[in-house]
Image 1 (cartoon, rainbow, N blue to C red):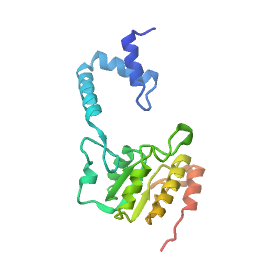
Image 2: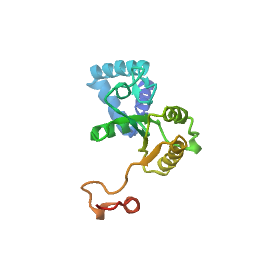
Image 3: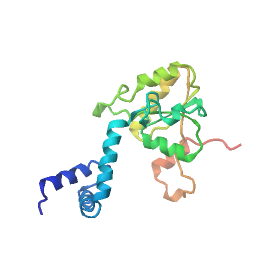
Image 4: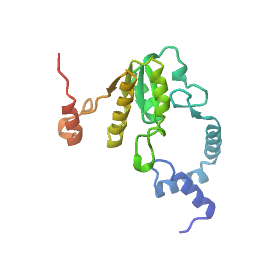
Length: 199
């Protein structure tokens, strides 16, 4: 069946969301137009407001509607620690753990020369300026354990060393509660390579 032009436009717009394929987008569109119209209007209003007011934090590049995000503005954070992540979702994940009290720098991606994403697109100059201020003692590299994430971490570790800042990499390997027989070979190899002495 061929959809009307406006319905097709809505379905295609919903496909821009990550993980949403054609059938899921169609189901969402039908829901919004059948029984979800009040929610759809609220979604349109919230999306419009967010698009007009949310931007990158002037210091860490996290999404915010203020000049500085709440983390950078907080006086209770450890300013000697700077954790570099690939996305705002990564900041939320680390914050949810409750185990980190330092500041962040959000790359909004990773190095990918084939896609035209180099150091400038990731804010390397802004990061270099922060490191040059002298307050950061450790740069924690929390990029994803992919080829691009590892290349990005390597580049940033060299940037940190050029500014006399210690660089560390978050551990990767066997998850808590995981069983070795279910862990893939690459993860297990990484865990073995990063093993530590038990005191």
